[in-house]
Length: 452
Image (cartoon, rainbow, N blue to C red; front, side, top):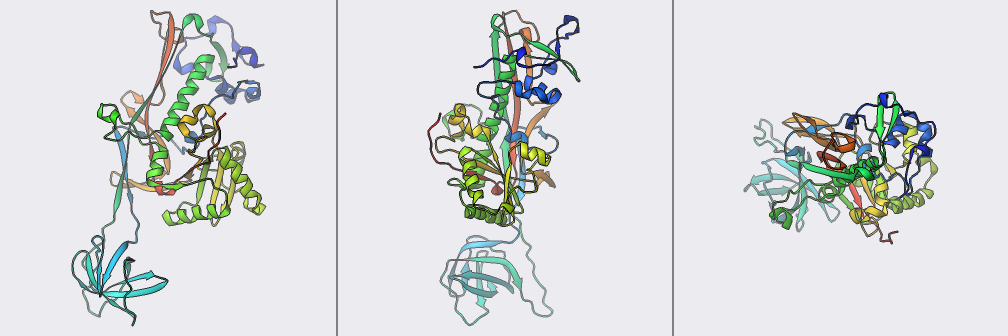
């Protein structure tokens, strides 16, 4: 592993006078890369790492919008309304009697309409036999078809003059979506003899310090938090670990999408694939822009796909689900295409191409090739009130001591002195993910290729 010392950077404002150096605390620790990003961006090219910075961050951070949200219980939940117009599948027909798989909610003089075998049918309710059976009289000379058929019960009605109208109201189906709190932990320790020295730098925020080993472990902690949020699968109730009393953890983004969203079996390689995805979005809601976070294979397939499209389709006018400019759009390597009224923004996702974590993502062994996240906001109900939320959010638990997002405790040479000849740092976060309208998300499979 390549080292990184002070002389890797030129022009850095180092503090050498011990009288100007305060105590080392988590609050005044700064990563060297963050220092260059915030205070001297011209030094970034001089940062040398053998395999890059090692950070796979970007997905969860880029999909956040607005202020970070918190929660205060062991789980979070919200409700999502079902479809407004109600249709029943698998309705059977015997003469003029139609049997529905569940309570139909129909009344006399309501009109239904349906298609089967490319033929249209329409009829009016003449009698309600039971909660699941009605008698329908055809509005044409044609006989009813052989079932089963799909019927919409929210079409129309025909009332006589002076009639009393209807007495039954509709009941709107709502689904309760729940996720659970999850505690992430990371620990780093070393003997003081092996501890690399710390350096102090001058910043606009005062004196801040950095340490190479600590910075690397801090980045690893961030990576593990993001991997957990995206790829963790909640342990089942009957699993060996749950039966043994181990905490089950949260549903990760991938698991939620696989259970409630759209699964794409392979790579997106054709314009028809994008058209099919656009159609699915139109069927499932109002989302008309999708960020597609991809591995190398999917980005290559998208490049080939776009080569066959009119250039006017490329480089869309929107820049993702977060506040940024066209310059940021280019920096993140977004490439966009608009198909059938839906814009797709494709961007590389480092986590999927890192050979050291393919065992987590499965990207090099038939695993995930992309994750499609809707842009913008949607409506959910919390506490009986409708709220506008991002389609995906990372939330952190809040208690009387503050927000539990990457709480840092330092001991030894890093902070509070201890008796042992060593130093260590403990990081701890408690959070969970919220996916609203998961039926607008996509997860893709991939071809198998050899890992490096």
